[in-house]
Amino acid sequence: MALNKKLNSLGFMKPPSETRVVVAMSGGVDSSVVAANLAEEGYDVVGITLQLYDHGLALAKKGACCAGTDIHDASRVAEKMGFPHYVLDYENSFKSAVIEEFADSYLAGATPVPCIRCNERVKFKDLLETAKDLQADCMATGHYIQRKVGKNGAELHSAADKDKDQSYFLFSTTPEQLEYLRFPLGHLKSKKETRELAHKFGLSVAKKADSQDICFVPNGNYASVIEKLRPGAAEPGEVVTESGQVLGKHSGIIHYTIGQRKGIGVSGSKEPLYVVKLDVEKKLVIVGPRASLTTRHLNVKEINWLGADPFKSKKEWHFKVRVRSTQQPHIAIVRPESETDAIVELITPEEGISKGQACVFYGNETTQIFGGGWIC
Image (cartoon, one colour):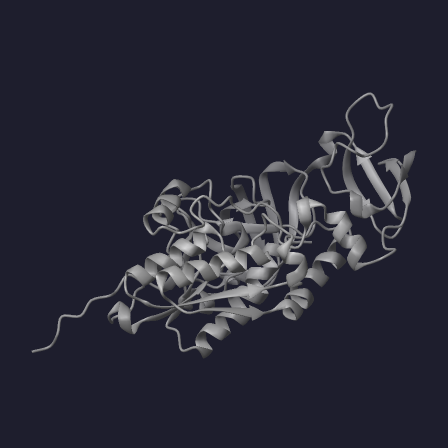
């Protein structure tokens, strides 16, 4: 008589003990809980932590996801829960795939989002291939996002907890990667539930603070990192109005971002001034009133499409789009120009949009993410 088999919690038709899962462990509470919970369920867990930059510097850097202390924390979790843990040196890969582009983009007047590139080019590419080399059935992470299986295969959906949702940073996940990835925390209603699980397993990271900074940018000081990576690149120039009136001097465009109001270094205006444009070639910081920050139309490139129908199968798509991680999606019309380029029309203009940021597409009546691209 045939055995009545059923899917395990990761979606495989076999017992957890016969299902190998590689867990990407940052050393924080989220990925630690994922690994501990899967180990508790009886899965064949292998933990992997990536060393992404100089270990000596990392040891002195707290509050970032890839610091040396975090590597130690990940190892302690693996030891307590009884599964193997490996640290892989990805410093060269991370530098070439993420940090170098970050520096070049910033010098070009853009506002890059390196965490997206890290997921796209390191974690979900190189690390995912390592997981396959280890003959793992899947790779799990601690990201707050949901993977659901629809009629056309795996779909990407926003996390149940809107405050922790990380879909903005994962829009470039490809359909092939999505088939292999698992996100066990995406269904949780709050971060409190995650910490309760950490306490349940007796993990040392249960009360550990969430990481706030980009891992290689101490205290959010982008300019200091750029100056270190590109010595002499911070050339001085002028602060001017939109009509060209010179208001003052600046010590380098890298110290400014679109939408910035404080710290511009000029005074005497009757109304508040904002950075509305950066002219890299002429070394100009262009300032203007808040009204000059509004944008209705965006050029978006390098689109990663996750919809079931081809992107160009329609002349226009009606989505909600998010143009920065801290804002809620707003209604927009996406008009494909090619398979990877589009014009996005925002029904309600938004302020402070900068090239280098991502534009992510969400369903109007669903939690599904249909992809996204880069604002150029």
